[in-house]
Image (cartoon, rainbow, N blue to C red):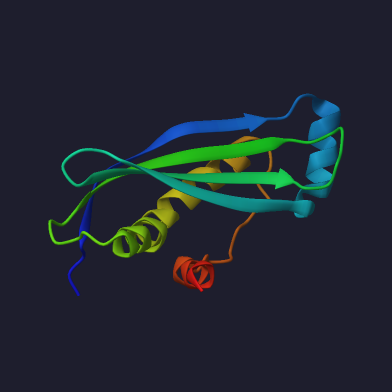
Length: 140
């Protein structure tokens, strides 16, 4: 199957790791298993069949706590759609599934490097995200 888009560029648009003090660091280190990964994807049409896709990963504690760390990355991808792609539904699937399936290994590696370099080398994210399944659930 030929792809109906091409990734022209991908890069880290924004990256953040915040741990306010040593007490927070120690608390987070003991409670990092409570942290959850959230993904948010948005896109912006550019000219000439190009789209900027921003994929945001946020790793945070949903529990209210004074002591917490904050980790976030916004990963931008610039894609060019093939000329025959016109339907909104097709474009949506490309942005939410196809592009994500291609770039996710790169985002995940960068995000894990951020967490490890922020003092949390024990964090692992083994669970593969099924973007197609998420898209299908959203569409129904």
